[in-house]
Image (cartoon, rainbow, N blue to C red; front, top):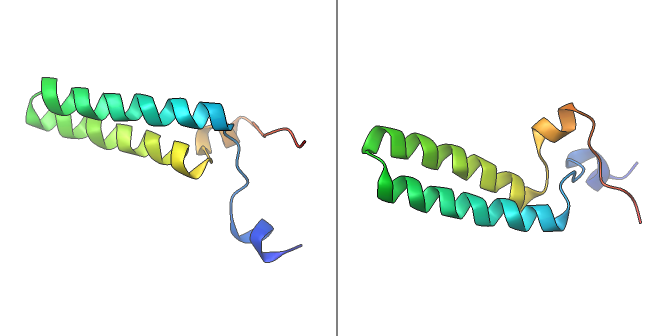
Length: 73
């Protein structure tokens, strides 16, 4: 097995869903910082940032727990 297959996580989020995750998280960060007071806005912005990382990287640990995998083409 090659290094790239063992050193990195296998992507389990399709490209369309990755784009949706990024757009939703950017909207959630903006809404949190505009409409909420400081302790809550930072909490929501931090969680939305974590959600956006799953879109950028293409790997979601919660999806991996339930056994989700991308189909090979």
